[in-house]
Amino acid sequence: MLRFLTAGESHGPALTAIVEGMVAGLPVTPDYINSMLAKRQGGYGRGGRMKIEKDEVQFLSGVRGGLTTGSPITMQILNKDWTNWQEIMSAGPAARLDQRVVTRPRPGHADLAGAIKYNHQDIRNVLERSSARETAARVAVGTLARRLLEELGIKLVGFVRRIGPVAAAVDDSQPPEVLAHLAGQSQVLCPDNQAEAAMVKAIDQARESGDSLGGVFEIRAYGLPIGLGSHVQWDRKLDSRLAGAMMSVQAIKGVEIGLGFAAAAIPGSQVHDEILYDPDKGYYRPTNRAGGIEGGISNGEPVVVRAAMKPIPTLYQPLRSVDIKTKEPFLASVERSDVCAVPAACVVGEAVVAWELAVALLEKFGGDSLKELKERVNQWQQWARQV
Image (cartoon, rainbow, N blue to C red; front, side):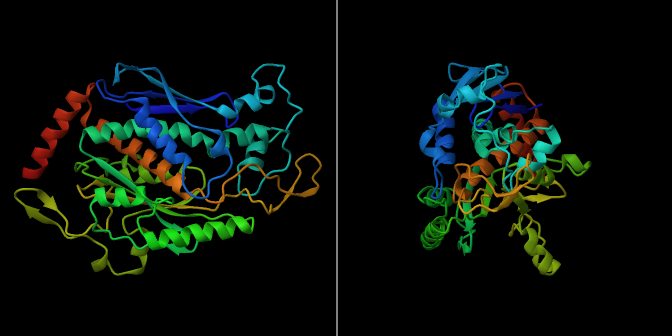
């Protein structure tokens, strides 16, 4: 079973992740993961924290000579800002718990609910872990899974479809290489040049007014075999697991697969995909409205997942709140924040999708080494084309 845990606080010494169940013999380097960590830190609209950190992963176990060994993989990302916080965030009894105390919960954050749940009088104990800084560890984990998918011929492409009021016009027929190239050239990961310029302008306007913007991003996975996930139990459905993974990312408030919510407004004849057969490539569909998943099972078409991110809740024109100690009304405290983090969320989305697909692949095909897994997947692909 492929699984992981992350640990660490936003201003703690480091973020750490442990991955268990990864096959042996998978080629992976820190530089490969660092490239995605750098991509997560980029994107127009990011805040001051990104100027402080330069995320780099260290393998502490499970990788030797550039290959996974089959043992648990420990990855660590140091927080450079730790030097400014070690007296306050220290684990020892000498920690300055009287410094930088937060008692004013910010609307839209986990602050108030978390403080009540865990009986904290200092909201910092909540916001340090609920911070989106945690997603750096998940990008490292998901990029490791992405490396596995690449070895099996599976390609992931993520791009931004909307920021605030600006929607992109995306040619869905473009091959993955073209979409990836166009998105990679954009400072907001948008493959539509005209929309990109309007998105940048909208972000600038939000910054000037002390506001923030959300948006929509899309992740596509090409080359998946038929048969990942299952219809037999609710928690084995691939679309359910992908949606849950997306919703676990900070600030994501909606997820759709394929046509998604648009399917509710049109007749069934315009929603469902016809099934055709070709002796060379097997079963296929001329359309992909289902987004590559039917009945909770991958059907061989590209998997298409879309997520809606709310605007960053930390505003430079703060909303009203109430002090948890005095119960007096105040304007919510302002932590260092972004104006728009939709491009960064897209990178995180790619990582969590990669992880769930890797889990589903290993559940179906098993294997303790990359060689064994490849053989099983290839054998299945040949059989599925002919059955």
